Length: 268
Image (cartoon, rainbow, N blue to C red; front, side, top):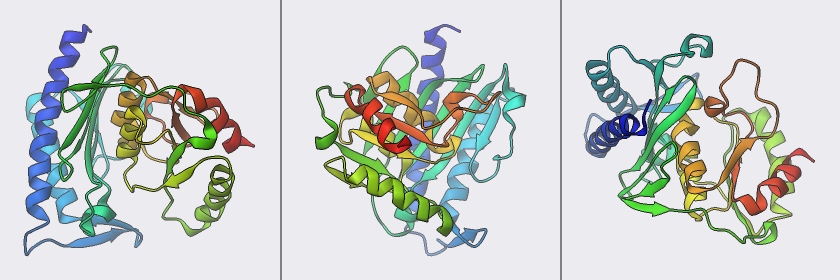
């Protein structure tokens, strides 16, 4: 498909992300706002559900032939079923814990893949008034200004982002990774939103990032990082028949200068 068509989809995604931002801003101030836990561990709020419902309903009414992969309600689609489809990948609130605790690092992430390749992505941070977006082959932008991943950074001066699992056993291993990285870089940041981490790598607020995440956490942000000039890959091999653009296990993103060094530290 021509890039002009992707831009049309991107414009649509930007519009619905902006409206979803209004929804979650209103929801947090309602007396009916409530939260619950998935599997007694992972936080979900009434705002997650309201945001997702709006986004999915709008996508379905506008593009009924397209498939949807979304964190809360449409999260069991198999990669085998999306060989030639358009697929919308949605995280209605990335950073739910931040959201529930009135922290501003909260995003709405919407990506579109065609033939298993992400071709457009939006990451909107309503409480920071920042919208990151990209179309494949057209560069990355923040609030209508083109962004580029800075060059010339060294690993010892790098600021690296990461995140932690809800699983206590996994956290033990993650602490080992954290120790290795922290011994080799300037410092570590944990923002609480994978989509935002990737966008911050794109523009140089972070110089690198690694984490195990889901497709909806990273699809839009990874495209934005790549289009800005960062390198995005994985600690290990992507499983057969799994699109790399949608695979979040062992995700690594960094400025070109330090990507190989960061990957070597993580795999050491």
